[in-house]
Structure formats: structure tokens, C-alpha cells
Image (cartoon, rainbow, N blue to C red):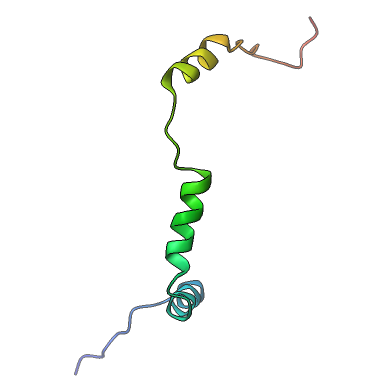
Length: 65
């Protein structure tokens, strides 16, 4: 007679599942926050300028010049 094995669910996973069930709007708020801080169009020319202005660091920065 085989035993029914329940998959392991960690305490952190259970906490997040309960939190999302109690606050269904939470995921939409997370996406809104991400769009405010992280999801912005990038300017390739600006980043190319940053890369060209970079000064190479010496191999051993603590040496005496």
C-alpha cells in the first residue's frame, strides 16, 4: 500500500501564499513600484559615453606610485 507523499512547502513559501491571499492587490502594487524605480527606457548613446570616459584601474591599486 503506497503512502501519499505531500510535497514540502517551506515556511517562507507558506507565508507568501497567505500574504497574497490576504492582500490580492499586493502583486499589482509590486509591479507599479517596479515600473517607478526600474523599468525605464535606456539611452544607448549616453551609456556609450560613460563607457568611453571610463579610466582603467591599475592591477594593484594599493601599490606605491
